[in-house]
Each structure stands twice: as C-alpha cells, then as structure tokens.
Image 1 (cartoon, one colour):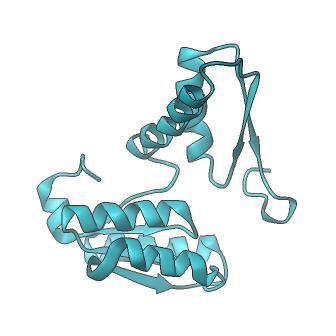
Image 2 (cartoon, one colour):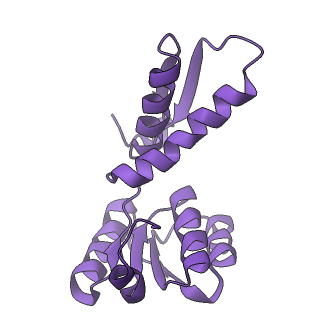
Image 3 (cartoon, helix red, strand yellow):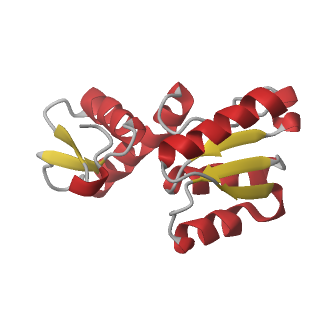
Amino acid sequence: MASLPPSSISRGVVACSAGNHAQGVALSAKRLGCRAVICMPLATPSIKVNAVRAHGGETVEVRLFGNNYDEAAGEAKRLEREDGLAMIHPFDDEHVIAGQGTIGLEILKKCVSHPVDAIFVCCGGGGMLAGIATYVKQVRPNVQVFGVEAADAAGMT
C-alpha cells in the first residue's frame, strides 16, 4: 500500500480476504491513516474478523458478505468500481507478492546454521507461495518449495 499514489490513499482501499491478508491491509491502513473496507465471507471465523478490526481500528470497515471467497471478492470489486477504492489484491499483485517473499527471508535466516531441504507453504490464492518461492529460489536454488492446501479448502487444485 505504501507504493500507492497519494490520491489512492485519500480515496481509500478495498481488499478481500478471510485471513492474514485482511489483517495486513488493516494494519497498513491504520499506519497510513487510510480508509479501508475489508470484504470477508460470512463464514469467516470470528477470531479472524476480530483480529482485522483490532489491527485496523477506526480506519477499517469489515464487511461480511457472501457465502464464499468468490462472492466476497465480487463485493470488493463492486466497491472498487463504484466507490473508486484502490484494490489491494491478496495474490495477484507484484508488490503484495514481494512483501510475502520476506517470509522466505525470515525462514532462511532462522535456519542459517542447518541445511534446509524443503519449505512447505500453505496455499490459498498462491501469492504467499509465489513470494516465498521467488525469494528462496534466488538465494538457495537447491531448496524445494511446496504449496500445500487443506483437502476441504482446495483453492489451487
């Protein structure tokens, strides 16, 4: 969000996520003094919803909408189109992916004293997997990076 032009920050941002991306956008909005609307599916666990509210404070509106991610994402796209909010996409944005790549940096820093053969990354939309794999393969190309997903929440298969 720090790369957005001031005009976008002044209009506000919108994001769709049922988890970590929502919390990151909320915290960024608070720090930038930016309005944010976070669209989350109706079935999002309350612990996630409350975390988003806590990270964002008064600058963030949590909008529970739809029965699944796709329906909540549709609401976010509507707000982008109709209200002129800047979309902060959870997995189709090169800046977001680069930021998620810092997780790879953290993993490798923690494992500097012993070899790492593989890293397993939980995978929803693929942004975190893309970021971690991009970083890790640049600095330790021999490390294998695998995307994993829950059988009942398979977003990539």
